[in-house]
Image 1 (cartoon, rainbow, N blue to C red):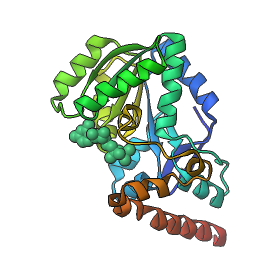
Image 2: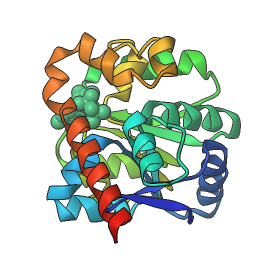
Image 3: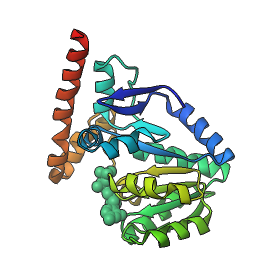
Amino acid sequence: MTSKESILGVKVTALPIETLLKDIEKRIQSRDKGRIVAINPEKIMMAQKDEKLAALLNQSAYQIPDGVGVSIASKLLKGSIRWRITGVGMMENLLQLSNEKNYRVFFYGAKEETVVKAIEKIKGKYPNLQVAGYINGYEKNEEVIVSRINEAKPDIVFVALGSPRQERFIDGNMQRMSAAIYQGVGGSFDVFSGNVKRAPYVFRKFGLEWLYRLLSQPSRLKRQLALPQFLLLVLKEKFQKGTR
Ligand code: UDP
């Protein structure tokens, strides 16, 4: 899979979701492993200070542009990404695909009651979905987790531990797991369970999910301060490039 842009040293896949889904299907059919990471300004900022995290993100098969900050940066750096693929949106697409094609999905992460409720809601929407199994995100014994995932024989594993914990879990264990596709989905199980509401349509339409999240969870302010810092760094890179 080519077509990647680099934003402050972090790769972002510049392909529409339809192309990604076709590529993912090919991988599932040929058991060719790949992981999906959602790239947002916060993660790009973390990667500036953490080379290992940067390498881990860059070595993933798919880096989806999660959040308006990434498409603004792409535009500033003369890239082509003008769209967003959120982690939860990607997961929704994979659930729909799995429901149609009988792919088996596994859920690892979040609190027990959250993951159970999320699966119940998802099954309500996708009745043919093959749920291979689940484990809550507070089971920490990796041997137990990996063997339970392998016994369940999933095609796709969703990992909802928050970042960068979920990326590290996938990176550290992917080699010994048999599933083809691994996606780190952050707080998505909370969204599917109904515990956390997705931003209303108007906020999504104008790329203002971050504002909605901030208004509903003011404690996220500290994390969101990564956005202005990120844009400043992107502008700096743009002007440095321009003067070269
Ligand atoms: N979580 C978990 N195990 C842990 C820590 C967190 O399963 O040891 C879960 C937590 O219950 C929540 C998710 O990870 O469902 C983190 O969501 P957050 O919104 O922080 O993730 P983000 O998308 O912002 O990375």
